[in-house]
Amino acid sequence: MTERRTKVKSARVLRTERLTPHLIRLVLGGEELTGLPLGHCTDHYIKLVFLQPGVAYPTPLDLGDIPRAQWPRLRAYTVRAWDAEAGELTVDVVHHSDEGLAGPWAAALRPGDPVRFIGPGGGYAPSPEADWHLLVGDESALPAIAASLERLPAGAPAKVFVEVDGPADELPLISPGNVELHWLHRDARPVGEALVAAVRTLDFPPGAVHAFVHGEATFVKELRRLLRIERGIPREMLSISGYWRRGMDDEGWRAWKSEWRQQAEAEEALAAA
Image 1 (cartoon, rainbow, N blue to C red):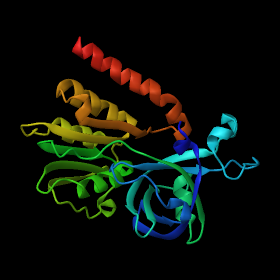
Image 2: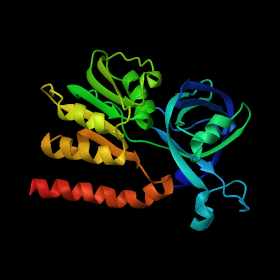
Image 3: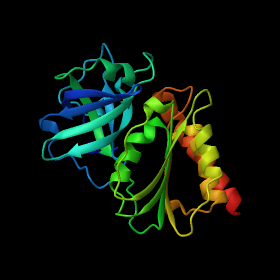
């Protein structure tokens, strides 16, 4: 990791808002936000830093200066919006229960509370050269999808599929593009099942598509196979990654993610042979 990725920055909570029963908006401010390299990507993310109890961390804190065993726990979240003039960073956090780390933490935050993070990172923005756009994701990808829709070229065709628990989890999404938005309700089905079915039966328009597919790793892997192998979408026109995996905490998923990626790439190579 580069210095930019390991230096821990500090912010404070300006305000919070419960957007839906399962989504909490955090608006952060503070001097250390000045000059953040944000704006090019619509999937910019930061990693929230949760210090381990009982560890004496140096100040200022750079993860590159401490043993890996003493690293804080990290949780990655998409930057929903960045207002450089106001110095406000907006991050939306999924909160499904009182279990886990970041969700309950976000639910308990109050104005003035400190927030530590590293980043930002990112790598996707809707291509103005694409004939049409495909955006697919669960709740974890909703902030990036919302930010991406706001950056579509005027009139650009886009087909969007977002899976949430139910109607109460839907949010208003705005875009200058020509957007066909589908909210899919999970009900009692496994995460992503409805998304896979919707994309598999989708009548793809002609022309080059730029696709963004993110969320739970199981359905993302299945859609990667569908889009890369069955549909033949070039890798450079597809942003696809598992944000999380059912049954794993974030540390476990990060440890397994490289194997997940290697399996997907091996399937693509075998299909191309």
